[in-house]
Image 1 (cartoon, one colour):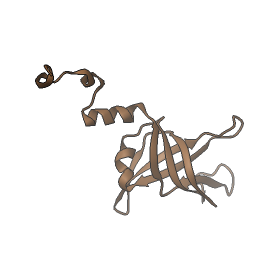
Image 2 (tube, rainbow, N blue to C red; image 1 turned 90 degrees about the horizontal axis):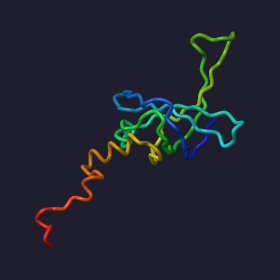
Image 3 (cartoon, one colour; image 1 turned 45 degrees about the horizontal axis):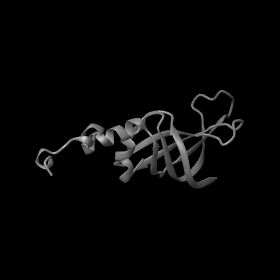
Image 4 (tube, rainbow, N blue to C red; image 1 turned 90 degrees about the vertical axis):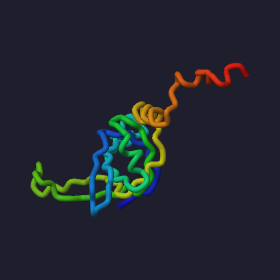
Length: 132
């Protein structure tokens, strides 16, 4: 069973860098908050790669992002089952696309540092143009 769509999620931990089949990927452990207070929060794993590598590398735990992809339910036998014959069910998004970073103080602070633009530099007067 799978569901395609756009999901607004929060990162549950920092992205983990992986290499699968010679390709660089980031594993994101994310949570989709339920619409109602009584519903459970859905946790799943999303794998991002390709053009989203730079963006994923700058994310941190607690950041809020929009992901697009197909959410699939996987089922496997537990290594140490609590009950005899227990199967573990987990949602995962193997080919996720990072659409937008919604909330992240560290992500946007890093973007300003790499562009060279700072709030203090906006009000500086260029000496050659001071008399104009």
